[in-house]
Length: 108
Image (cartoon, rainbow, N blue to C red; front, side):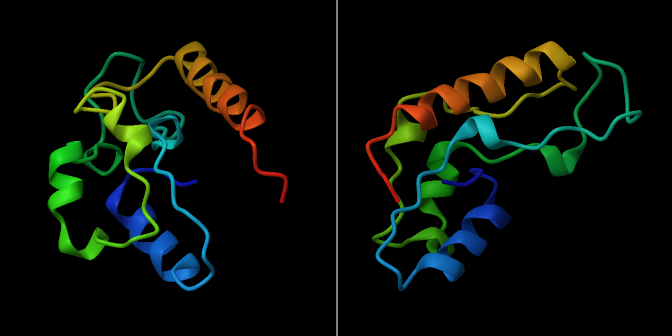
């Protein structure tokens, strides 16, 4: 499981590419602007924005049999926030991820 940000997916492919593990990009694991960057609702930092699902899937650097695109295909094409998120929005996003993770069938 990793963030759908390109740098996170590249790292996951390099780290787990020969282990047989699947990589599931989850939009809930996207960046959070550093505290003090800007108030909630302000424009997001460029490094906290991503690329559309179509752009990610077209990137040859991310072509790997271990990447399972389904989590991203089930959501919106633009999976990141264009604005700095309020703390309660970040908490809700992380709670959503934790709920999904707790329901996973893997036991290792």
